[in-house]
Image (cartoon, rainbow, N blue to C red; front, side, top):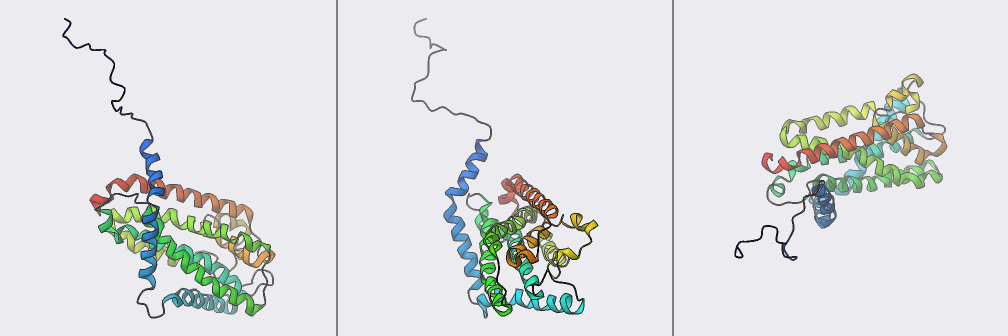
Length: 287
């Protein structure tokens, strides 16, 4: 009997112990986003290089596109349709103050939505948090936005328009515009891996959204009875915020609609992240 093993003998203290804890995988995932931050910078720099390398007009395109759109909208809505501006602000400034966030939103949405397909070789070979890929593409759109600010400064000098203290809050609305594009972008890029025809939906969304958003006109022209419902478009609050920062008191914010737009942005951001994480494990197999 003395040679039989004792069933209840204590294990050596140096033996490894495996602990299963609910939610640990998610905690590691969000930590991996920070540990792979260098990959984020590499992908962002690569996208910038691809955007501007071996191009005829290069950086100038980031200036020409919003400027020409502003000229067309100013002529159509300001001269032909004779829609009013906000306060005494020049109509060109009214339009361009909306073109800045809209271009940032549309470029970020388009680039993020096609990012996983464009990095298929990388995703199918090595592990890293896939969330890095669509978020890295936003850097390029943000650089285009910063370049477009040159036109805004030129227009202010031309019209001798001096902004107020509101301009200090512009970075907060820049972040809001990026978040407004990130939520739908994550959802669509995840769907795009499984259903490749979603890539054709993005140009339609951005083209349609350009005309239903208050880019070429002030949101104050919307009837009061419909203005809150109109704010279900999240870009309404973002654009109104940009105009308030740039034009000051001439373009006041409709706060009930702005609060509703914030809720819609938060909802789509939650939906985009949750759906992306839900489908992420299948990307390498389907792509």
